[in-house]
Amino acid sequence: MLYTTDLLLAIARELEPKVAEIGGHVAIGGSCVYRGYSKKDMDIMLYPHKKESPLVYLEVWNLLVSLGWEYAKPNSEATWIPDVLVMQKDGIRVDFFILSR
Image (cartoon, rainbow, N blue to C red; front, side, top):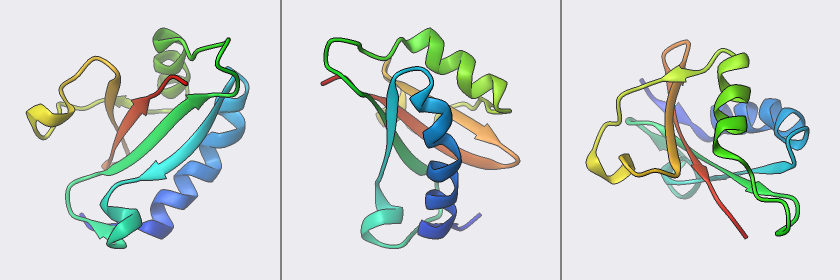
């Protein structure tokens, strides 16, 4: 599948109000931003509104699952780290990076 900046932006726009409900914001990155496309996946960063209120991993997981996202085996060891949720929905793969301030 070819992932594009337009698709990444559409997902980010859809997620932003939902992530705001748990105290976060959505940001985009990766090759879809600097190259305009990716053949592997897309990267979305989730970060807290306030440094005093970090995002809770389990709340992020529950939110994404409630929106139809499900766990996907990472493509590489690079994304096999605790603060990255590798998820998929309708054949679309996204690495969700949970950031702190």
